[in-house]
Image (cartoon, rainbow, N blue to C red):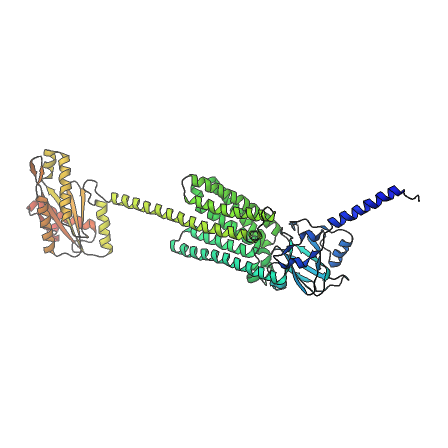
Length: 581
């Protein structure tokens, strides 16, 4: 072989050095664990990533894949996808001191199958047995009793170590990892649990308070709010891993489905609340139909989640959440512009939740530097939304009760108008019947006086109907002035009046009352310098002596009144013997 010229050999060596330098620059460096004593150190940039499309590789297969160069530097923000592929992570960690205790923690609680291997020392010897955990296992398999899958590294010597992680999920989850000092990590989780407990307490208090209101007012909106709040509480507890920790720790089947099922139920009840709160069936028929579509999709997502089709359920939940939020906001704007003021509060609640989601996304993308908001932003948004919704619901119920009060007043006014004589303001035949029915229902003794004006027709013929009406109004006033509380004066029409007296009355008391009524009617009315006077003939019938129904009493009182008119006696009691004769 002809040796290369010196110039070419120099270029070749320079190119080789450049390649080695680039490889060292691009190759992930070891994770320096001593830097993980603070708030947690992201280690995704130092990890190698390999997707096992077959899903058959074990630890030996992953080590062989790394030796074959199949592992590549991990891209920040890598997600597991929704295809159930197996993802392997390989990281080198370096400890500069003796006796270190560290945690490599995933950022999600919802990966189905998690397997930790290592750490391996420089000779390739495993210093700890493999850990099999994730949602497919009981909660007791989690290292350091943590909601998030975490790998504990207890290293007795300084040096470099290698760890492998095998991750598989049926839903799309982030694969980010951070390194912590174990004590610091456990303290941070305690602080997180405290904050979560405050959030849960607020939501639970809202739930109980509105449950009481739902029982008191029996209003559908309160019940839907309670269901929405309960679903939101369950969803947040699932996302935080507390459902798996405290409720479903020994039930992996439920752990795998709780996240997506809770989200689907939250969307379902939230859509029903939107439909009822904004009164869409009455105000926006097209929006009501679209909301029913969101409800149907949420039900389908819940069924898919229960059937174990988590990937499909998650996609449908994400679509329903996006479409439902936009639809609810648009419908709230339209209803608000129609003059329904509580819709503005509903829109404000939606905006707060949407803003919190934007903040979480911004932190996740690195636009905003706020780790606290990344971990808790969604919870803050949910609490703010539910608080505003609670106020909006109370405003809506107040408005509805105000409307009901107005309708009741209007109905009472109409009922009173139906039962009132338009000319005199006394009760008419309907009002008289209603009062008689009350007395019959209470089984009270009562008496009926039927009063007819004598010489009223000449007044109309001489002075005109206007004066006749004025006379009838004055007679009604005088009759009313003689009544006790509970008695009723009614005008049947023309110049016929009825007095309904409650309580048991002796004949002497009824006679004295009839005499006072006759004297009151006989008082002359001054009109245009003329004194106009009429007399009254009164027939009296008592219940139960002379009949039990109003019809019977009026018929018998009419017979007695006819006899008083013939005898010019002013009043007369009903006498069955005389009537039959």
